[in-house]
Amino acid sequence: MQDEMIEKGRQYLANTYNRFPIAITKGEGCWIWDMNGRRYLDFLSGIAVCNLGHVHKDVLEGLTTQAGKLFHISNLFFIEPQVKAAEILVQHSFGDKVFFCNSGAEANEAAIKLARRYSWTKYGKGRHEIISMENSFHGRTLATLTATGQTKFHEGFEPLLEGFSYVPIM
Image (tube, rainbow, N blue to C red; front, side, top):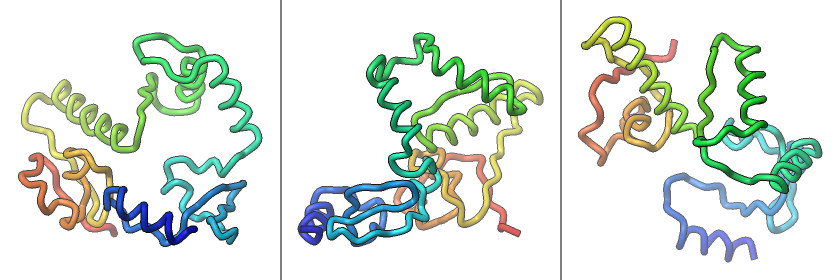
């Protein structure tokens, strides 16, 4: 059954990642299980996007409660849980505003735009270079792909955006 699922996945899913040859069916805490019932310690944590663990009781309860009230709404409206989360983040960080994103690539795109806007506002035109680390990965949009310091991801998408350079990780 697992082999069949993997083959179907290879047939129908875009080959954007080198996937592990296992099909995950459930998770609990830091453990995940495949279709054959084998248990694995999950060291990936959603590739650091969401490392809350799997089926955490409090997270599940919070999601279920919120989904029963309002599942998704545009940022064109105020939403009490979002405002409360923003308040907590501002109170515990250096920032005074919060921008909620849907993905890491969107967050990185926003960071690139905000850095360029800040420089343009403070110093004027001409100071827009973004410096990234070699061997980094920042996403699959054109700007985050350009910020990624790996030429294998750049190939076939040229010309990339201007104003990015790469330095070695020390």
